[in-house]
Length: 455
Image 1 (spheres, rainbow, N blue to C red):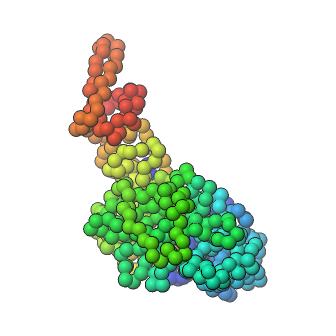
Image 2: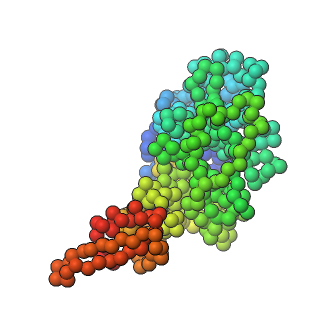
Image 3: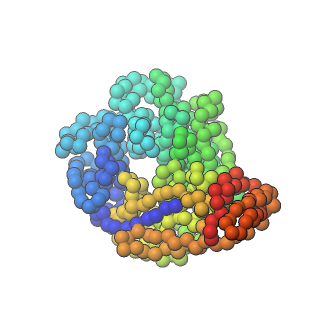
């Protein structure tokens, strides 16, 4: 189940091309907006008012992030230096500069508060932030070792970073990168790295692979994390959203690639099981942005299929409650909102998840936000197997309400049959035979045994 509020304006954008992003702040009700190359503003979400700001003469080249471990703000300047400061600091130009040996692409923020940020270089190489700050001299020596020259770049020479994610899996920290080359614009390469605490090695490259789905190409992707495991969610040109579990890739240290294998070993794998289809919602010839909203939901933002505006779509990608229910059933509890004023053809769609809100830069030069509510399906929804036809209405408080019409369905499978007996006063004992597909038999049986719905 998902609910999405109306979008509201947070602030005007100085320049769409120089807007760098939004991240969660130290307070649950605040976010940090890197509004331009020289200005950063902290906003309180509840009243959408500014509560602080910083400016700098030097150019910011990454979004400002908040490090929950060190309780500090961090950003990259001019691709070659990092500065770290506290909330009470006022003059960023007076903050100490930490120079780096190679151009930095961005700072990686972990999906949970238990891991520290990492520095991602344009070459794909990565360092933990504290390791760089505390042991900079030692790692500069490691960087320049001749026998590690093959490790100075993860990406191939013709590849450029497209997306990056930092997650934790079984107490380890991993980075998942995707990169595209001009020669393969529709077939990105994925890199899975594990950050280490070893003295002579800052990371291990676990896997290098591409995804392949018959008669389709990759449009968008993101990564979700569930109770110590992680999955890669992908959207394809045929509208299918697939889920690939990365646990076996991450934990298998024996299969880590050596330096000589970095540029030679490439796997081609299936994108995994289908969890949804959005062919009728989005214009998949254009770019679509995708972001994880937690362990069980993702949000997509892109041009709608009618070419009249944009669509924001939130869907459950199977929670412990929904289990193996067909994705058609989950789709009925998704949240969707159209943004007719947003012209995706004029800008690339981008979306951020921070402080329980979605943030989108609109084509009219404004940063808009909307709150969302996520939840699991009710046992009755599991019992029926699908939620039927959904209609939405706009409530006075701005929330999208979902009104589900129950549909009577007949199970056509003959894999299993349950005969239930219920005693009703004045009627006596009667039996009801239900044919249930094998896939959902184990989940439906205990629900039915609790009592048949009156409908």
